Length: 540
Ligand SMILES: [Fe+2]
Image (tube, rainbow, N blue to C red; front, side, top):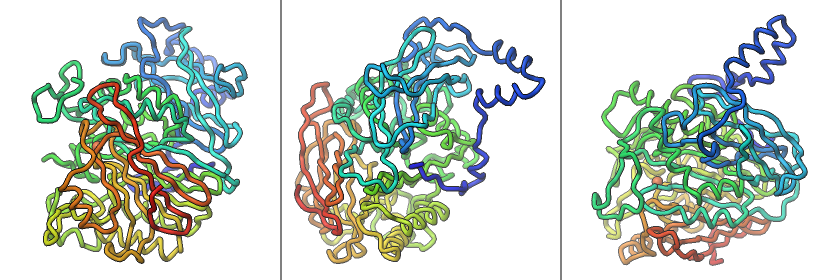
């Protein structure tokens, strides 16, 4: 398997507890017992046989994700009326047929089956398809009640260790609905990527914004006047609203996604059990449980990522041939609370405390063990908040760093760099989101010493958050000048395209001139190349 899950849950429970019984298992078990008649009729009464829908049941599209050498997850969610409570579905399970083929017209079906969409999971369907060949394209489709979904494309990973000449993947995230159109996703769909890494902020939990309520234009207004979301049904409504976007659906149908979450899937700048708002932790955990359930329901992830109440195990590892190890990190659930009250701070002593963490003990151990066993040419960390030290004040005498980023847990960053050096890990590439700007730079032990670099970091901008933005300005040029390891800043929307070969890692920063209309023009603003064996960026 390419997805290398941590063996134990670091928080409250063991990952082995996750084994859930699917219906086929259940019926097989029942068939061996005298309960078979009772069991089968029990299910027949509960299931919605021969469903007839008042509207198209696949309104939220299809998706694939978490690829492995032998398969991937395929996802859909049955929602004929996606913005209504329950998605327009009765509170009964429904059987959904699925098929995987080797051709885009679904003529040569190689795997098929039936999955049960449970009301408890908002009629989401997650099928873990296995038994496929490594490193090739597949196509999939769902059918229910005589209706067929669109056909999606997925791709398996090459076998770990198998020679791979080239990998092409995308970096995307931060897609606030009101801020602009998801045009970048239309272009991601056209890229035919091997996969897309999504760093989070898939939704934003905030209340509806009306035009004129803020200086930034409100490009799209959320219907139904939603308030800030707290309950499972409210999170479901928000995901449905976002997932109705045709560009987002096209991107999902084009390639597998490897997803993580950041803060806005739950609540702005939450940290572990601590919310950003004044709420007792035990109350916040109820909200976090609802948020995680809704996230799971809408993401093409494996059953191992199903939450247990407010807990979830979302960090995981993907091995892509002999070329890449991708560690997907969780920098929200196990981190220390932001020091000095969060935000931009000068001279925050608390940020230097040795016990501060971004990953928590168990995730750190898991990551560093992986460093020791590294066998691929490149080693990537797919994560959320900026790892490079960044002085955000243009004045040379003022040092302002952001407490929500790795600058708020300096000892944690030092431990990570120590582990990289001790395991002699080469070709470290950190992939980041969160701050709605493009950045590129070198990860240095001492940020003013070019010889101390241990890797590079590519920070991808947002799909829409922040609106049209601007290329750069005088102030940001001055900020970059204060940080000699930073090579690039841009404040436009888009995504990053990576082309990875044994010899080099190329990053193309793809930006849109605007997201306030649907016809924004795409261009490659800047390209960088990292040569294998070096931790420096050169112009691509
Ligand atoms: Fe964001």
